[in-house]
Image: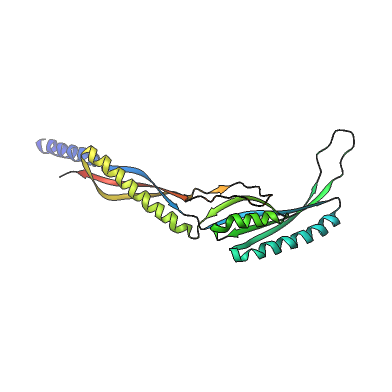
Length: 231
């Protein structure tokens, strides 16, 4: 009986030990954000050439001549760092707004060629836009500024995000009386160009365009460290 009782006590102790959860690992998780600002290196914008006429044939013929003149204007600006990245054409049926009265206005046809233009010399951007406006052919819209190596700027923002996360974690750990150990996990967050665009309607020469001083890039990250007691 004594042997059986001793065995029962030993088995109970083993079961209780097996059910004891392991000690929970202490950690700290911090979200970091990094930003860098880079000077713009080029500008991109769209330049539309539109032609309206009462018939399809007239719209197509007139637009062919106007588009050819537009191409010549843009090519003449190549010495100022201007290039056409791509172009597209569309033909729409257009109905003018209905005036007061019972008569319905006749529909028109509108042919449009859109040029995606890139200007590499920002110092002469105002001169370029003014030359395009002076041609009397284009409607310029939505200027976007960029840099040639966006990935490098985004990577710099990621590095800044890691430094920001570590700085925060070190402050929290010091305030709590612990210190950081090894990194347990890293979660990559969003990394992006925050953009630098400006709406523009260039219809007259001597247009004044002011490029931004810098373009902002942002990256986010979440890092988890194990924390230990300070010695």
